Image 1 (cartoon, rainbow, N blue to C red):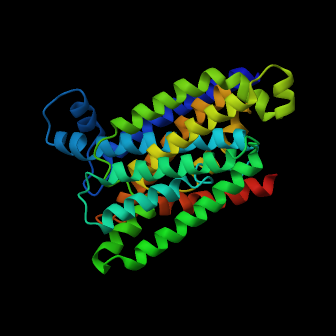
Image 2: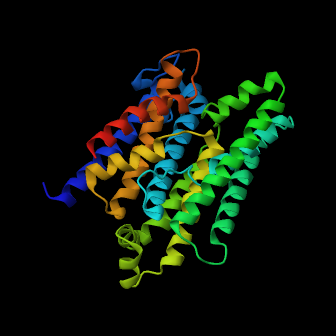
Length: 323
């Protein structure tokens, strides 16, 4: 099968997987809803399961899809930006900044309505700090950005540990749950969905330049690519996507690291296809993982970040063994 045709087949399969994962999320749970009742509720019929579908499961499923798509998209962009296959959305300290903001809000006893705002402010502050320090006198390089991000992430980790130490015992459980990744508080998926659509709209027009950048900055510059401007755009899109994901669901690991690798194996490294495919695959993976996290041990719910880590570690080791 020609490579381009194969890529479009994979994209079609990922669209089908996305729809199937969302339907499974609406049907499965501690109280199972038959698929026909789910379809009836979605079509507007007044059924006994309508409240469960629309008020409990649909917002959470859409939020999970948006967060998974944002993390996978950010991971793909970071791997191109840093030319490092181990780069993931959290490598530049953005998750740590969001964690500091959220734990500070929890420690101060603020309402849950303020937590997303503090998370986004913390992530944005970490992003601007990393970019400002890495830019320095203008000699902006991938290595400098990566090292600055690692240092900022370590600093945020120390502040998070301090806040956990100072927190009252009754608040520590909620803090740890958020740090491990949790979709149970995601009651409005619209901000994350809008950010996912915006990130794709901004990134896809630069797909050709990203293909050239992936082959080396010197080659891209010789073919007319504005390297400095492209790097800034990619960095800010990936950072804002990560900030939106972390704000919605906390720190969920391995999605942004593993999904771009798997998609790259299936359809190649053409960013015009890789970026939307990664968003679809990441969204589907997180929806399925969240469905499992609230179903397998029902009525107890696990942090979805625990399951993504349990899935991601063996997959990453398998990929490492192949190459």
